[in-house]
Length: 380
Length: 121
Image 1: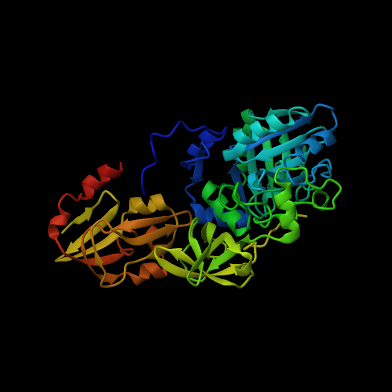
Image 2: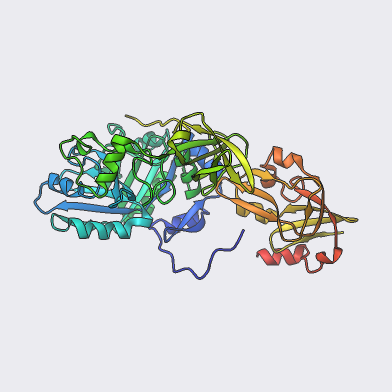
């Protein structure tokens, strides 16, 4: 209940800032932006609304970057980007996107991102807190092959939930043919948008990049639909946690590799040992040896046995020995109970294993649980 | 005896030498949807300003500090059973615990309703 630090530097605003205020958004500092953590509906109802109807999220604080090949061939931009990520980018067909990570020399994760093939260039969406460093990395490492264009004049909106597609259809957008992880330029309400069928909630939904000047009118048109409510960062976090999705800076960071983070599924065979383009990204030695030989620890889902939430930073114990820690934790509204993710040794990482979290001097029992906590509803 | 308020957004209702303690409606509105409440053990000797209870929303855990020293003589099991009471009735049904006041002079300087309203304005 402490007041916010008033000595902090001025916060940036997204193109939807005035709309957040008009809608009664409770604004908080997040990654240098003044962002709505919740609206008058409240985090619980916003969360449940997204799971049953459609929620509109302002994610304009995230970085949008166009990677244009100097050769004119998108494969050259893909090959260049493969120098920075362990994913197969060359194999991403036009109109599709893929989840990726920028890695460091030790195999740690500098940021996680989405990469889409738009035919003549790649379109990247990166985390707000990392976007300055990401841009610098791209300029330093890829400028020989690519023109790096930060798309600062675009807003990014996410419409998530089982009614997201029908809402867009009602507004005349023909997006029904898209399936999960399709991505590309589309006309929506007459605007030049970049649309992907993806999101950060585990629900079906879309992320839509719109010109900043049109963002407020676009968002207002979506919010005029009775199925749509504005959703703040609070519910965004509880939704992604139930979906078992990583929050950069918490569940993954420079000290965790993609393998420890249980993201090995995101590294295609072509980049692994024996693959056509094995290695060739920062930290390849560490990451590829972990794929073959395993890791000492990994990210797991955790369910507290009681009602008390176990939060980020709580130490995890097996008997008396500290063996790991919680990296995300809170309350899952759809499960009506506390949930968490954290890192445990492989010896204690099997589903069903019981460990103890230290919370306010007490040891609370938790059970290792399969992720996601709430099944994904992607339209594949 | 009227209700007293602290700068930490707790209220106290005094009945003889027992203070009933809760958090204010302003505090619950700042916290948002409450999903968990942890109360002190019966018989615990509280020192003024130490963490006595915990109120957790979806997003965060907030300590409730003992507004006064003394022994915990009663806790509200209804609010641990249904934490949403804090949102629906912070000023009454969602009282948290009762303290047998050790030193009434610790009440000096607490706010009345008017002063608290100005404090949160």
